[in-house]
Length: 482
Image 1 (cartoon, rainbow, N blue to C red):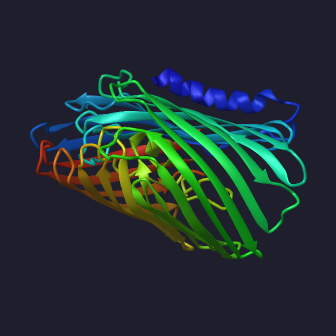
Image 2 (image 1 turned 90 degrees about the horizontal axis):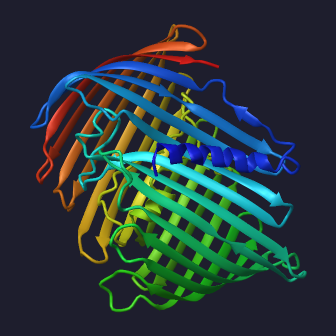
Image 3 (image 1 turned 60 degrees about the horizontal axis):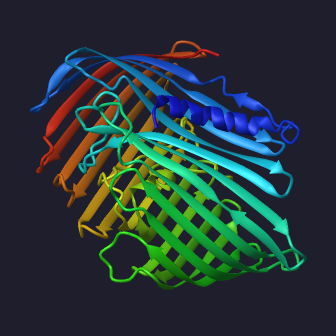
């Protein structure tokens, strides 16, 4: 999926949601006038076998577009970066960061179309190395893209039952240092049919579901098919407590060393919502690979926002790119929470293995933002283990990021960010990375600011990757053009 395809993604979401003007008349597209553009000049001094010194000029506009009203809603946050190297510096010329989603009620109460798109950077190696436009090539970076369409159909059968069909078609691909499409792209389709409890039932609910998910790979990896049939029930005890459970059967044709991937499935779960600002949930069950569980907590107050979850389930790199590669704080509507610069608070943790092999992923992750009168602090972290289904590799990763911003007065702000990751058991060997960034900014006007930026990174590896240190110093100018 090239740059042109990325642009198509944005146009698709905008066009799809605008096309049905009769049903979406009450909603309007809103372009955030505070969307800034940043121009920066950075000096980089990197040691190691592939060390270099040089300058990089970055131009990074941010585009924020939203729509909510009528029968359509959408949120698009797109941040491309153009980088030009001077001297020995050799950055990636054009990189993309994108988080977009939208939904259209095409036929009232019956047919809905959703779309989502994401783009980001990560390392193609298993080193867990942090990747940006400047170190893209030396860190074996790759640009990842995903795009999904989710048509949904609903029909009331009678007062006891409704029919629903929730389907999805998605694409994932990667491009590396040669700027060509990755050979390990894939496309997937999910087909679903359900009979659900209707308006006759209030506190009690039930469902019958049949789902088939297929994935078609561009590489030599075998395509896979996953079928699941289940029956579920649920009950809500007032506004605070709800319980649910299901039992079913799965029939899978997937690549694994296991003798059998078919069998009975079951799960039970509960949700507790003590107040409108706080919610907790947990689920426990069993599948062909053994126990499966998940849970989460979200809380928001006037000064604090918290989101955390834990899980054990089977997944792969493709599925994480579609669902989990970006973990961001969200509000009660599922919309990303923005920092003081208007950007989503995102933790992009390393993709440890450049393969679409299934693995059992056990993880705990969280993100928290505390906002004071003059100071705000954001903390994100993750602990995860991956147990691969074919190669039997066992990988562990740990990541922690702490960022603090302080208003010093006289239109001056200071931001300090520390980040560390630790990877054990990867094909390229174990690694540790420490990254510290400091920024001192001054508002020149209500729309323009300038900043001094300092950075230090220490990367230590004991495998095929080379250890290095990297120092950065830069100045930047940020302004709102609209």
